[in-house]
Image (cartoon, rainbow, N blue to C red):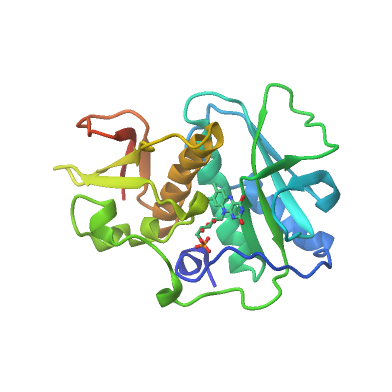
Length: 240
Ligand SMILES: Cc1cc2nc3c(=O)[nH]c(=O)nc-3n(C[C@H](O)[C@H](O)[C@H](O)COP(=O)(O)O)c2cc1C
């Protein structure tokens, strides 16, 4: 299955076979991440693949591997991380490997060699125990009209994107020139600082799905003409 097809099948996996993946497979994953598309080339970021002893999570489940993700904290770095690593999530699942973004947790007994970069988030992965893919009726997602000013099936890849606590805080508007603006719903009440971080990562994740579905034509800019919408934060403009 290719990455585009995986958008319509993927799901977060929370049950793993404890057996580690072959080193060759981990190398393939590193190769994919090292060559993934970025939103903002001016931001330095890095990652490391570690085992379960190097993470603390609030989850009851454990995976044999985790991608710890770090970035320079500048510009749209949270979007950038979501964009890069959602491609990795799709790659893993396209290769039959289960994965799940993990916001609630962090590195343990681990020192990041890239000083000046902050720990952002991680992705658990490994061979799934049970079904890896879901069928389209199993997606729990908002309908297009709730996430867009127009009914537009071209937005389905973004609609199916994963988000922290499945919050789907994205909102799309259409411009006269055919481009789209992306907004993030400002939370009605702020649960904690982490929610804000995760929701910005979510924006990059939705953009990654739009990119993968329109690889040849996708273009993004974080600045651009936009209307101010009440209760929403402008996140950028893109064409597909
Ligand atoms: C930024 C982010 C953080 C997440 N954090 C967690 C987490 O800490 N624990 C967890 O079990 N799932 C986590 N998830 C997975 C979401 O709960 C999941 O993507 C969402 O409910 C949609 O389900 P699906 O991925 O199966 O389509 C996270 C997802 C994202 C995008």
